[in-house]
Amino acid sequence: MNSAHEADSTEPDSTEPDRAHPGRTDRDNTGPDRAAAPAAPAAALRAEGEMPHTVRTELPANPLAAAAARGFTRVALGRWHVGGDAAEDTVLLVSELVTNAVVHAGTSVELECRYAAGVVYAEVADRHPARRVAAHGQEGHGHGLQLVGALAKEWGISYRRGRKTVWFQLGPAPQPLELVDEPLSGETLPTDPASTRCAESPDAPPSAVHPYAYREWTDSGALCFLAEASDLLAGHTDEDKVASLAGQLMVPRFADWCAVWLWDGARSRLPRLARVWHAQESRIEALRAELAGEAPVAGSRVLPGQAAGWRWPAAAATGSGSGASVLCDLVVGGRRVGTLVMGRAGLLRIPDEVMGLVEDFARRVALAVLSARRYTLQANISRILQRGLLPSEEMRIPGLDTALVYEPAGEGAWAGGDFYDLLRLSDGRWRFALGDVCGNGPEAAVVTGLARPVLRLLAREGHSVPETLDRLNREVGEQARFLSVVYGELAFHDGLVDCTLTCAGHPLPLVRDASGGVRTAARPQLLLGVAQQVGYECQSFTLHPGDTLLCVTDGVTERRCGRRFFDDGDGLATRFAGCAGLDAGGTAERLRREVYDFAPELPADDLAMLVLRVPERAEAALDG
Image (cartoon, rainbow, N blue to C red; front, side, top):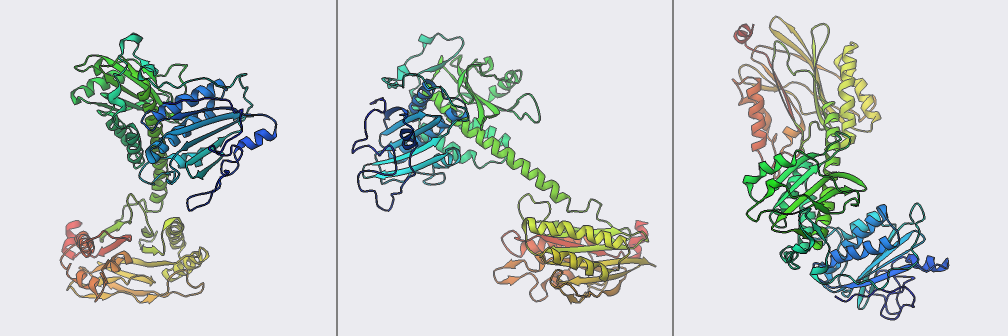
């Protein structure tokens, strides 16, 4: 590997980009893939009369490049006394950009770092200008530009005929940092495998490892492994599954065993051993028992997110005897969310390239864990709010055979745009409702959360069915939304049930009598929220023993299969008539099954049915 480090004491020549303006060159800079980048911070530094401390190196296009870039950058930042988040972010971005350049350009990579006046500046250049820099989701690899855009204060890309450069600026730092007197100069990066730093097992002498003992680690596609890990980890929304996948990714490809602790300071002061994985499954439980007794702690000299050697647990021993293990905290945004420990049998110490791989992998695991926690938090909040939209009472009316089907569309949904309610009044009457808010999402949920409490409040205040809908219509209109609803009242006397109901813009309710005949039970009226002054009317009828009242939402009637709908040709009434002899639960289940069987795909709309059946006199006597 060629390596050159020099202070920025010469003017840029024709083969280097303009240091004051990385997007501007002394040659043609036009073409379909060329874009001007903002001015680099060097211009401002020269204007202040202060030249930046500058170092640069060239890295070969091989899997060692990213680790070498991290080591080079850490040395430079350490010489300049740059620490904290600025150093951590700089090392991460340099590593990602060098990885992108190696994977997507396949040429040698030039790295330059500068620091002055609290500003850290770095640029990564390759010699394949025709290739675009891959962002996350492009060409299947990398988080490079996504991370740069998230962390860097300024960044840009410049193109030349024989060169492409990505640069970024971090800072200025919140507090001025003192520069050392001499810039980094004359350093050489380690190119011999024997010269790389290693994490030693506490019991292993430094001279006991063979220089090439780790070749199998670095020759197995480290860059492809990290790209694969990013894609797989990003798709999980459960932190325990992330921990499990992390262990399976490491074992047996890069480690003989792996353990992941997860830590949430808001819930517990101690980390939780979430996952233990071993290449020999028979050793997993013994290893878990040993590791559960203590939480791994990095030394005081270990920086957040930096890999360090750790003790070798006795339960991890394999046919190769003892080995070496490494610990790395899972850190994202300065927050520790867990710890990853992995080990390899047959080694006395773990080499630098593997240490760098563990650090990169741990950062990806930490991001996935934090993302899963945020998803879980939002899902819990959503579930609690959705459950608040549904009645807490049991959906049962004494004296009636009652059944309800309520299935919101969407995975994990508790409540949707459809709603239902049963309410007992003080005089023994009952009110029932089945409604559907037009639309979906949070806006529809607002109306759903409004409708049921308003219906209950007005019913308890003694308003009739039409008066209640008149008042609700005005409330819905103020929300600039529309609502369809079947709303009715039930009164019991002498084994009969008097029903009064109104159907506002909703699929018409059906009644099946004891002989099997089916009829509509109401007349269609205007949707709620369309006009302020409507004047709703109600229809009244009596349910006799054996009669069944069916109310559904349009998720049933408008269930589609190609160009056909479930209710075409009175399809719902025909199927409802075929349920003669079934109780309320059997009727609801048969209709539900027929709705699902009507089309090969799952329903795309909420599905809701309310079935109320007056028992035969013999059934009522048995129930009594």
